[in-house]
Length: 324
Ligand code: NAP
Ligand code: F7E
Image (tube, rainbow, N blue to C red):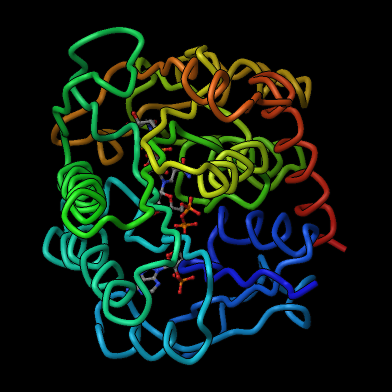
């Protein structure tokens, strides 16, 4: 049988690395798009790098995307690349719009030009719901983004829907709620907390400075969520799906569980620093994954407490290894 071929933008990121593992395990040939940088940034894919075909391209450069698709002719394209850190989107709003919004159009156009039969996945986000109109959020909850990142993701979502309706592309949008793992970037709050716990437990730090402890998120495990991406592209009909756990927890609860996993009292170590507060906050997110469960048969395996414990354990191993 001929191997199916998938192209992933953002393969060096958290989700890209898990999705590449999943597709390789299913026998896919995996093409990973990497952008040029002065130092290599392949830590998350080092363990599978020899099984991937890495191609240079950038969401800011249309010609490079057309060339990647023309040269490798994938049957599925997963657009995971983005400027994905919400806080940075206030200091770099134009870059965020170019990458996270217009980058989606560039990639959709590349598909339309080279091979409109290619199936397309867009990494949409619960940040689109922002100042939420209803609880829990579903596929039909109106959008009210609260950051340049959220605004850019709304554009990316609607251009995906529009190319599906205008050109008949098999294009689906996954409205994924926060998902985390030991591979999460250190700037996101879960990993910042679990890495901070490990450093405090090993005596390297005493305090951890955070921003808004009251905000609530629906946190799941990234390896569970990439399964939903793949399932969307296996459906006969493209559509849009909320992917979430259906539970919400505050940053304060995250601290309690994470410090507790290392037998520490979070109140002795966490301090609030207004540098980490945002100009506009998303206070509460919780998704309703009913459509993903009923249509895709998707379920998450890992719950909140296990996820946080797993991340603390991984960071303790990492910090201890660095100490030698
Ligand atoms: P991530 O770890 O920040 O990875 C982002 C990826 O995008 C990296 O591989 C990065 O490459 C790449 N990238 C950035 N700018 C690019 C450009 N101009 N051209 C090509 N590649 C570029 O993000 P993630 O957590 O895996 O998230 C994956 C996607 O899902 C993103 O679109 C994110 O916005 C979205 N999303 C994430 C969550 C979540 O909770 N994780 C929830 C909803 C939606 P470098 O390695 O070179 O920087
Ligand atoms: O913040 C609060 C912060 O940066 C979560 C991205 O993957 O998920 C992610 O976006 C919450 C916010 O993720 C700190 O104010 C408190 O309320 O981990 P985060 P995010 O902004 O929810 C969505 C779904 C995406 O699509 C994005 O790409 O935690 N918070 N103190 C803090 N956040 C950070 N980063 N650092 C703090 O010190």
